[in-house]
Image (cartoon, rainbow, N blue to C red; front, top):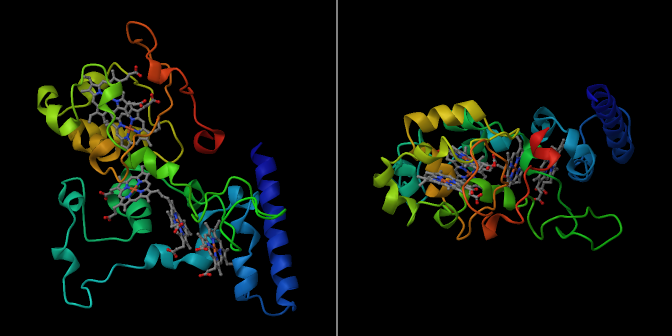
Length: 260
Ligand code: HEC
Ligand code: HEC
Ligand code: HEC
Ligand code: HEC
Ligand code: HEC
């Protein structure tokens, strides 16, 4: 299987080099022009599934280099305009851009291991909608370069209603459990974080030190008013009683893209 992926990758790289030259109309200048770069096959299926971060960064290094301004044009210092969640203890360092916050800051590196194609699955430079022509990619999210479902996994609401034993949102009930999620989760839903963009062990370690870390990805930074319907992997100690209504349609594993 590894061999095949490597072979396919080689073929794409060869095709890329070739196509760049054909579109550019010469064989000497290897710098791609704007249009051929914009339509570079790496942006699309199937090549994007095999793309390495280094290939994307070859053209887009700015996404990991750019830093926010240290002060706004009106003179407000970024260090003095922290949002509420940026004052949380689990948040470290200076203000950072979105990409750096998820890929290069110390917290990001410890808890997560995103690749460009974890989030980027292609986009349509023509109209950013799926299915308008023969050649567009299927399953694109209208006017978004990334399907926000993935954000919901870590930025959704804390769904206390599915958690038997919890009577309210975490900030209201946390004290009852010494602020510790693992009081219950050492027994329930113990098979977790087995995805290729998460550092499973580091997450548990961080949670042991400070349960705020758990809440950070499960409600503490909820950009959405809804909760993510997590898959429900079987765990050792089953919940007593009948299968709850909300759990009836839950799958037990994620797509290969996240588990391979
Ligand atoms: C050969 C250079 C090149 C490579 C390699 C490349 N890109 Fe691009 N990409 C571009 C150019 C040029 C644009 C158009 C920029 C614009 O119009 O502002 C673009 C646009 C984008 C956009 C913005 C789309 C939009 O409409 O706002 C995203 C997201 C993107 N690329 C992600 C990626 C990812 C992820 C990879 C790796 C899988 C990648 N790119 C590889 C050159 C490249
Ligand atoms: C955690 C998810 C995530 C990861 C990982 C990620 N991106 Fe993005 N990226 C986004 C989102 C969300 C946007 C904004 C999309 C929109 O406006 O529709 C974006 C926008 C972009 C854009 C266009 C806007 C800009 O900031 O220039 C480029 C180019 C891009 N990403 C490249 C990359 C590259 C290269 C990597 C890997 C080094 C990467 N991204 C990793 C989620 C991600
Ligand atoms: C695997 C979990 C995970 C996923 C998936 C994820 N994030 Fe995050 N996000 C985090 C964590 C953890 C932080 C806080 C990091 C820190 O404190 O340093 C964060 C911080 C942020 C911030 C605050 C940045 C700042 O510096 O103020 C924004 C905005 C954000 N995420 C948006 C998104 C969007 C949009 C997506 C989807 C494209 C996304 N996140 C996907 C875990 C995730
Ligand atoms: C009183 C015990 C208890 C506490 C404390 C608790 N949980 Fe839960 N949690 C549960 C139960 C019970 C379930 C559902 C088990 C099932 O699938 O039947 C659950 C489910 C979940 C799920 C999956 C939700 C879904 O939709 O599938 C997540 C994520 C979760 N808990 C995270 C947390 C986090 C993070 C904390 C701490 C901030 C926490 N829990 C505190 C008992 C608890
Ligand atoms: C970096 C972000 C992040 C942190 C920190 C984090 N989680 Fe998660 N959690 C996720 C994501 C993403 C998923 C979905 C993947 C999965 O189900 O394994 C998830 C899933 C879960 C599930 C459902 C698992 C299942 O399949 O049944 C539980 C329960 C859970 N987390 C509890 C916790 C607890 C307890 C902690 C603290 C020790 C914690 N989480 C810390 C991101 C995080």
